[in-house]
Image 1 (cartoon, rainbow, N blue to C red):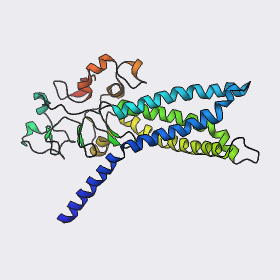
Image 2 (image 1 turned 120 degrees about the vertical axis):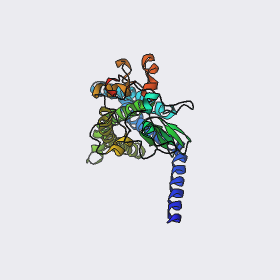
Image 3 (image 1 turned 180 degrees about the vertical axis):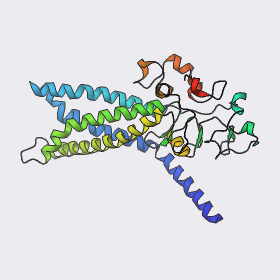
Image 4 (image 1 turned 30 degrees about the vertical axis):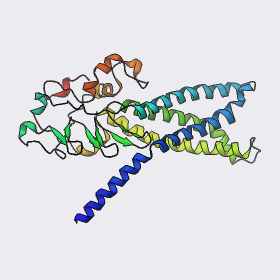
Length: 307
């Protein structure tokens, strides 16, 4: 039994190590898909149509302008997720007195250890791997090897954890990826249908194969990303994360649910001008400690918390 447990722990360790090694490979894979798509849409099909007269030129503009705008937002959001620290626990962080008293958090019972178990300390958590205190909603990532504030999940596509400080960027990445891949799928659909027609198709075998590949890839990404978007919209509306949604299970009232609008503002900020770009206003940046879960109101009742 002991050997089985040790083998399982070793397998998990090797799996996490393998995920770390995917790093640059996954980034190159994303850039490769973008490159194939750009070649198929811009260089092969719609770029040359700009020099034609009439409806073809207008159609090319109608495709290429939103294509490039969405591509810029997609890449901006993607590298914001990749390069932004999801949120680390400050070494000097200690729970406030009001956090130490009050009812216990049902999510914290499973990984509470190393501290006295009297009722006044039931909400304080301690990470045995990082050997430090854990704020509420903080979880340890075995891939990154550290605790992450308001951790949602570790994403191999962005080679980073998705947490308090880059969750908005991740959602925008999903949003712009869905719009971009949907646009590409619709714009290449006539060319895809032409593959199965009896007429003669212009282009070399290489350009035709690239167009076919780009259509299939973008259709697959559009459908898969749509599912992720629907899931994360429901998570944001309830002010929960993927990990918490799994752990809380049948909890009747989620203690962090502040209402849909405030739940949305906790992720995207209060300034509407910044909702659709991977950045925060200065006012929202000043509220980041609350966003990270490092500050709480003076009473356990969170209904009055604005951000």
